[in-house]
Length: 396
Image (tube, rainbow, N blue to C red; front, top):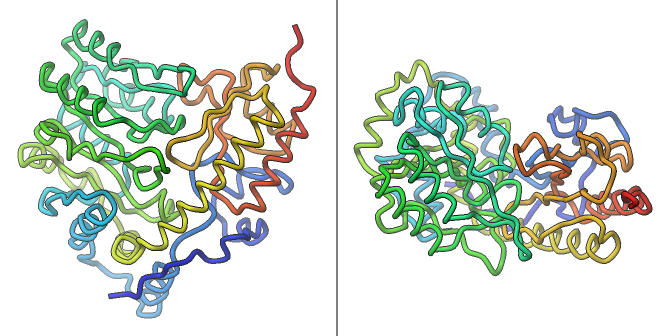
């Protein structure tokens, strides 16, 4: 359909003025002079083939009713076969407007009022809104900080499920945002085992699954033996292809029972993905594999640069090398940040990061920094953090 594009556009350069003029939220929340690193959106996409396809649609004035959503499932299945060795059945893939819509639909269809919803803070902030907006109970399964990095505590999950038979759904951030943790095969197998024992539905948010670095491997939850009867995977091309403003995602059901349950929610209550979002996602998934390889190489260099410089030049800041994502989770416990560490960091450095407390328990004294940008701009971000924070650590 389209010729694959194998390279990033100007991978060594991001023009802040052009980004601000584009009207994207990332670059317009804060005033000139502040470098935005607060939202999980990279500055390096979308692939050229996506831009070409959207231009074609505009030139054809293709703004009417459409059936493009019918092609989303097959395109996604093609992509995951290439990238992850997983070929989901397109008939069990439901297009949605975004991943959060898929999550809320699963909660409504597969749990009841008062049921417990488990998630793993510190975690992507909208997860914290699921229970209170759906009349469910929030059950915290905290991430565990070790000497090697953040990990899931599977023993603690087993204890939670044993103690609370009213837990109905596990909302899994896989890979984990903001810590960059990637679950291993043994960990996934244990989660599935617990799901069977406790009749637990797993909703696996795999939106960062394409962004996993050497030394780790993303294992789709629906490829784990025993998982399909208990699992819905929600994901999209938003993070990989920088399509945050395009409405298109998927909910991949493990079996027909789950598919029928979610389909029982009237589509009029859920909405549908739009034409441009569908076409952008389809084009990216059908042609973007080589482009994504180059993106991952650039992001891997960026994470190593940020990690090595922080460790060498500002060891007072805690940071683990992310196994995935393009965000770093910085521990500022050695500094007098107050209760809003991102605001403090912005005041000290001119860098706008994500405020750790917004990610729930475990986020105190932390800031999330997006390193999905050009090497040149990342150097400026890192320079500002190091220069601004040197000598500012909390004294005894």
